[in-house]
Length: 345
Ligand SMILES: [Fe+2]
Figure 1 (cartoon, protein in one colour):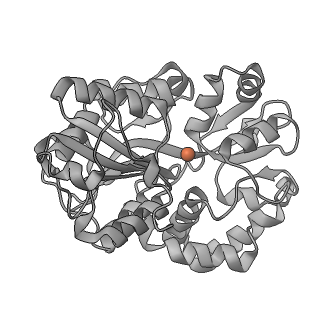
Figure 2 (tube, rainbow, N blue to C red; figure 1 turned 180 degrees about the vertical axis):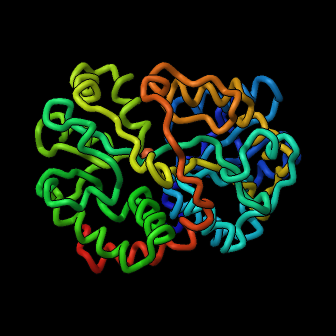
């Protein structure tokens, strides 16, 4: 089957009685078609509100960013997609390089999204921000023992570090940032040193690392910040208890700041509903909408006037690594090769 996830294409407002190709001809800009890697309830709610405000129907296809990029390549000019939404800058950079996106010139987006969180030529814009933090057992680790990503290779952490597999973009982008700041030779030594300190062979997602940490399978974990927030908000007491058992530490505050990544979106090269897509991007960048991402999903807003949430505020002030996010995409394949060489599964 060429497009195994085609069945996931569903309109939020009403059930479409036509295929995406047919619906293109209904009339440009009465709808917007989103290819997204995001899988959060808050997105659904916000799309619905956009539909109510504008009358523009939002159709969503969910799959991994890699699958969506392949699909865009295969579909070419016939693609019904208007927007590609990913959970990391690396894939947006890759989509731009493959010629799958087009530049958007919007004063609203330029003023709402800080310069380091968007493509310099306007091919993509961040929607939310996340930090790759160190979480630690409140029982077994003192926050004073933590400082930087680099310090995690110290012998004192032998058998104590939890993190997910290197096939995940989050760790690839973290390593890409280390290559950018410290060079390839150091980055390889760092990855080797970290593997030597793993508590177990990498498995599971970031939530699983926090749960494993809380149950004593390791003492610190490297995870994206919002996973802690989402566990706090869980309906399950066990998951909330895991969040309460860990502290959140933002590394490298004394030097370059904590590695960040973004969830972001770009208008596709052949978008049939370009104006609607731009409207949706602008809607999602509004401060009051940005606050909703913070509240519902514990993601940091990119708009500086957006209200933060109590959980995010409880983590205190922290410093962002302002490495241009394009670098994460450019250095991705080198990061993947290093992981292979050092045996980070
Ligand atoms: Fe995630």
